[in-house]
Length: 345
Image (cartoon, rainbow, N blue to C red):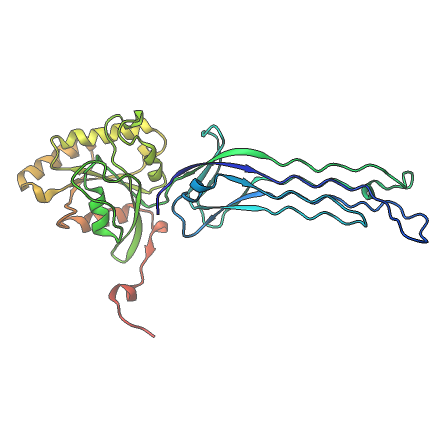
């Protein structure tokens, strides 16, 4: 399934039905009086977050959503049928933006949240509604209220506990593949990851979700490379795992490049706790590794861990550090019987 995290949608609610002008006409009934019914209500456009979705790909093939119009009222005091609502199903973590792509209408982060994007028009009153002691035969009715037409943008920000950061080929996809059942594309050239990937990682009886996004390069906030649009997918993370390629020409420069892009992006990313890890230690000797760790600790001002996603060295320590950095409310406990594979009735 293809990944799509931004979609433009055109919506329109239904118009209300017109009121009816009608009089009762029956044999032997001399003064039947007005009996025109009201028009039906127009349908509304509703958006709802559901389980089982992690992309907006459905909105690539359909961008226009129009709710049904209400039927007009009829004689014999019959009210018109209400128009059918239309429901847009989106994954949790979807932001609804106005046409300017800046004004946030709503941010749906929980499964089951519903929001009326465009309310249907009310139906018009029939002449029965205007009957009074002084106006016993009204010949007036109201037209139905027009529907609301608007253009909105849907932007998906994946909900994950940990977000992976780093330059292209820093080993992010390798780490995700080694620690979860996710199977991202892995190759020895830059930008093998073209869209975000999610994986469920388990350590010491708890699970958390890790998001892998395409690598950043210097000037990504200006649109270079794949840009920084994918950084929105790690805004909701509790922690950021910054992987630094230990085999690059200047790992410290790589580290400062990513930090500079985070600061240029703005928002909350710069305030999210980060764990810096020197990756690919299996391809360097111990002396080089220790020297790079010291340089990165001076640059970051915090402790730096070492890891090799290929050999698995230090991976468990990194996962444990992430676990302790995530709020306990976001962690999911695993069933020990499922881990051991023991059968129970």
